[in-house]
Image (tube, rainbow, N blue to C red):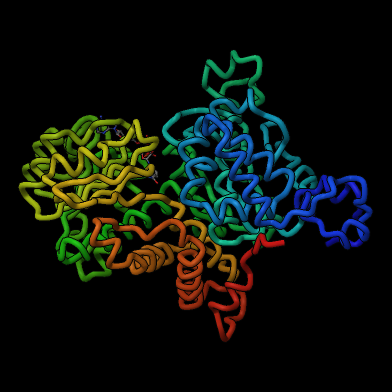
Length: 537
Ligand code: NAD
């Protein structure tokens, strides 16, 4: 506790505030007498009060607003509640509720949090970044709000995403909250409804594009290197072409990654590894088909490809195991236009519809990343079941209404054979007397631990090999009981243990790759564990 702070300075500081949990001695010491009701609570009883308040709310958006303001009042209480109830509260502080919160951002805005950059700040980035009160920033999540979840261009309203993601870094991996910086690159919006909304709080102009856009990002990235030289920059929810352009520009220059592309990929690869523990198939024998050929699917394939090579295949053989299908059908070389990120996956085959592609190439694994609900039809899943003892079905699009199929459909249409994972939480299904429990393909399994590992060893870059090892580590943490229920991800409530294990593996990889700038401690695991923020008072 800062010895100079007292009275309302403490109560109004979310990092210092314990509210009614200040002890009698502390109340004397910090001049809090008279400023609090007489009753002294423990943190545990405060948690009960928070949970009772949450239960009394009638909608998740109200729960989101309540937790958001708790974070602004009492950080340790907020994080302890989140950590101890992560499974229940992740859908409130992150997807799907965060999507709603972003859509309503202008209306529910109460207090500022995070850092806003606009085109007017061009040339002044160093000055304005020095306005941020914390000087040892290590983890930055930045978005320009153009592709928020599956919701499209939400402009400055997308700020909810970096805020939510960083809350998961803290809760999931113990990155200290004062080292986190949420950033909104507010370059305008092309969303007419927002431009015409009097409550919209962002820059009211069409989006900055082209060279001016990339120069603004570049000024930000280079200023971060000077101002916060140990910071990891996570790019989040950029439109696909910009997401790739930024990742390809900066991945070999600075410590950064794109979670939509790389984090999702590692989470899916982990699910694929774990699925082979149920299906009994060899990873190197798998045929994998993607529905949706955007940044998410291409990112997955770009990581599965080296994983197949690592399993002993040459590059061409590995590409030949991966098929892409989008709204036009199978991605083939004869198409007039092929976006650069899927060129490697286009086939020398005749054009064909999704169902025909499934019949022809007999994939063991289907991965949906279309953003379009219901695209895994009964026909498709029946063919998967007739070709496979245990077809693995990933319906990853969020929110649930956009998922390619539901858990019920996945199990019912495959005679209960499917190994199923979805992007949003899905209910368990009773099938022929068995309880089948879908896994949640949630990026939060990977990015907190990956970030922690990179920061702990002060890695200079985030590499593909780090994502590969993160995927393997996560897959190894699925226990037999989960596999028996068809679940290919470990319980989210173990997130801190999962993140620590992934962080160790990632840091170890950084040491192997000579990318760590901090001397390797004798006990890596203990050193990383000691870095993790503990929200207990
Ligand atoms: P994107 O817009 O870049 O790509 C969407 C792709 O889907 C495009 O290739 C498009 O052609 C294709 N598509 C659209 N309609 C289709 C249809 N009817 N049939 C076949 N293909 C169709 O988006 P993205 O960034 O790649 O994300 C796609 C989805 O993946 C999002 O909805 C998102 O929710 C989901 N996602 C989930 C996670 C997760 O953790 N679960 C992570 C990242 C992305």
